[in-house]
Length: 485
Image 1 (cartoon, helix red, strand yellow):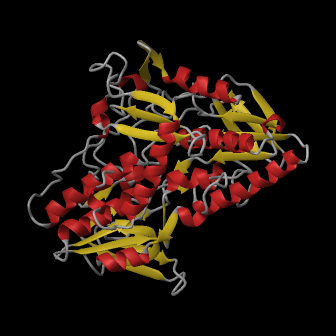
Image 2 (image 1 turned 60 degrees about the vertical axis):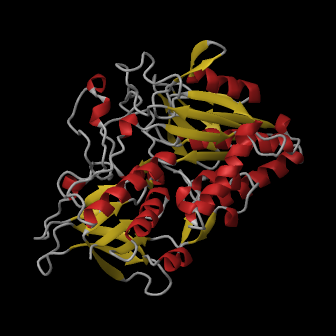
Image 3 (image 1 turned 30 degrees about the horizontal axis):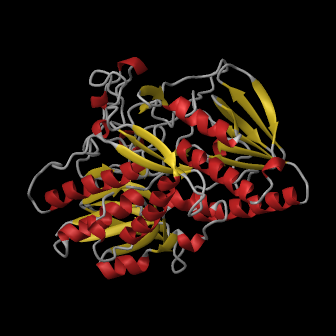
C-alpha cells in the first residue's frame, strides 16, 4: 500500500486529493496536509469584498468532507521536505507545524511514497512597505477574511460619500512583479458598480493601477480577439470597459510604498510620484511558501527542489535564455520534479520557466511586468492530471506519469465579474487557447477561433452558476466528479 501525501487544499490540492481517493479507494492511503480548516472558493472573494456575499457563502469546513471520504486530514503547515528520509529512516517524509486548536504549534511528521506540492502562494505583502491589511494601509481580497475587511472599509467610504465627502479609490497591483491582475480587474468594476448602486458615483474618483504594459495583458502578454470582423488586441477590449465606467488607469507601475493617505509609485519610464487614497485594494506579489528541503545526511537541498522564488521545479526547461528564445515546449507537461520522481507540483506551486509577458525594468532597475498566472481552471486541470498519473503509478500500471497536460497547449476560460445583479449585473467571458503564445502555429500567437472576449448580463449569470457549481463539486456531493475543472 502506497502513501500519497498532498500538501495544500486549494483548487489544485483539493482536486488532486479527492480524485486520488475516488480512483484508488482503499487500495492506498491518501493524506492531505494543509494549515487551513476551511476551503475557500477564492474567485468569489471579490463579491465578499464589496459586500454582496458573506464569508460563509465562500467557505466551508474541510474536516467533514475528508472524514466522509476516508482521507486522512492533517491540519498543519508544511515546513520541511526530506525526499530521501534521514539518518534514522529511509522513508521520505514531510515535517509540519500543527495549526489546529489541539496540539497547536507541535511538530508533525508524515511519511509518503508520492508527494503533491499544491501549497499555493505565500502572499508577499512584505515586498512593498505599508502594503496589506494586517500591518499596512491597504486591503486585499486574497483570502475570505481579507475580503470581509475590504467590504467593511468600502462600506465606511460609501457612508462618507453619502455625507457629501469625496473619496479617492485605488485598485490594482501592489508591486511591479504581481500576478492575478484579473482579480484586481474584477474588483475595480464591482467596486464601481457598488458605488453607483449606492447613488454616490459622483463623489468617487477611481484609479486602476497596474504593472501590466497595457491593459488586458493579464500576465499572458495580452491576446487578440475577433470583434465585428476585425482582429483587435485585448488592450482595446479592456480600455473600452474602463472608459465606459469612467475609471482612470495608470499602467506600467510599481508601488514603492503605501501609507495611511498616500501611495508612492514608480513607472517603467522612470517617473516617480505620489497618489492620495482613502481606500486602496492592492494585490501582493506571490512567492513560494518557504518550504525547505534536506537530503538524507541533513544537507539543505532547497535550491535543488525549488526556484529562487520558492516555487517547485518540475519538468520544464529552466535553462537561462533571452526572452525571445523561449519556446512553448519549455513549459511542463507532467509537473514532476526532475530530481525526485515521486514529487509533483500543481497549481501556482510549480515554478514557471519564464514569464509570458516580456520582462521589463525601470531605469532604476525595478522589474515591472506581470508574472504568469497559474490559478483557477488551470490549477484544477493540473491537479487532475497529477492525480491520475500518481494513481496509475501507485497501482503499478506505469513507472512514469501517463497523464500529461502540457501547460503550453492548455486552454483557459475565465468569467470576470464586472458587477452583480440579476438584471443589472455583467461579466466579461474570456477564453484563450493556448495559454502560451505559439507564433509558429498561429499568426497572432493563439487560435482566434478559441480566443474570445464578450461582456454582458449572461456572463454574470454564468459566473453566479459557476460559484454554486464549484462549491458543490468541492463538497464532493453526488455527481461531483463529472463537473469539469
